[in-house]
Amino acid sequence: MTEDFLLLNPGPVPVTDEVSAAMDEPMVSHRSADFEAVYERAQDGLDYVFTESTLDGASTAPESGGTSLVLNGTATMGMESAVANLVGESDEAVSLVNGKFGRRFARIADRHTDEATRVEAEWGTSLSLDDVREAVTDDTEVVTMVHNETSTGILNPVAEVGEIAADHDATFVVDGVTSIGGDEFRLDDWNVDVAVTDSQKALAAPPGVSAMWLSADVEEKLDGESAPFYEDLEWHLRKAESHQTPFTSAVPLFRALAVAVEDIVEETMPTRIRRHRRQAKAFREGFTAMGLDLFADLREESDYSNTVTAVSLPEEVYGDDCEAFFDGVTERNVSISGGQAHLGGQIFRVSNMGGLPDDAILRGVRTVGEAMAD
Ligand code: PLP
Image: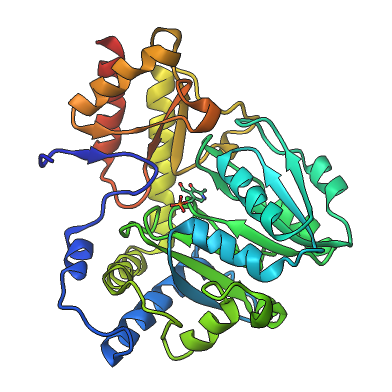
């Protein structure tokens, strides 16, 4: 790895030297006061990120409160924990699917209830709120959705879906994995009951742990007895009161996360959101100026992701011919991602999550242009 290596994949994202160094500190017991202090710092930073991810700096914490947790395991662990704790085998769950991660939530729900249904839209297109209104009823226990669909570069309408879920008293579980820490996320205004995010995305920490925010109302619904042992959120919450975890924590990763979220507190979320929005716009404008098309077909500019940009591969480098293009990018010491599932060979994706300088965005655009011209 040379010094000018540029990581533009939608996770893991680059981390600062200070975040890396935190992982190298001497090991301590996860039952020590030292570890409790680390977890407390991570929780404090996460409380800020979860509740104040607004452009105007206003808090969106519900009056009844909530708790930030860190779980061993990447975001899928967080998604699964939320569903496994809230959905019993006869509970109705509605999952919104317009990309790979919406589908992942639906697949998780399928494993926990016989009453899982989906509201689907073609990948790369917007979800229909009318379809959501039709699917969510007073019998719906849980609604799951992905805020920022990383597989397609779409920002989904959490506010509108949250209103529908709240009208039917359904628990609203949102994957904010590639939005939280980089874009607006308004817990109370959007009626979010559970929010899940990942260390390795816009929080700019190393991969391996996920973070979760649970509202006080949801905490009351949890019944540890029926939850999977490792994912018993009631137990996690009880231990978290004293900044402990039920099982051995990934100590170096918790430390790195604590430093990363403290950096966010220092930068402030309004500044961070504005930076992410500016950089994503630069990606979109750079690629379209080059004659490329954004993959998602959206009505409003504001429906495009502010953290992940997905671009259709042009005919010259489409399908099997894309390999040379991706090799050309790699040879220039830049790492980007291709399409996932059936979108392989059809698109490429870049991220501006975390703390990238503006010239990284310019280099990303230039590198793509050069590799396509090879
Ligand atoms: N949700 C979203 C929106 C994601 O982008 C990802 C990973 O890219 C995940 C969930 C799952 O993360 P992991 O595969 O690291 O568990």
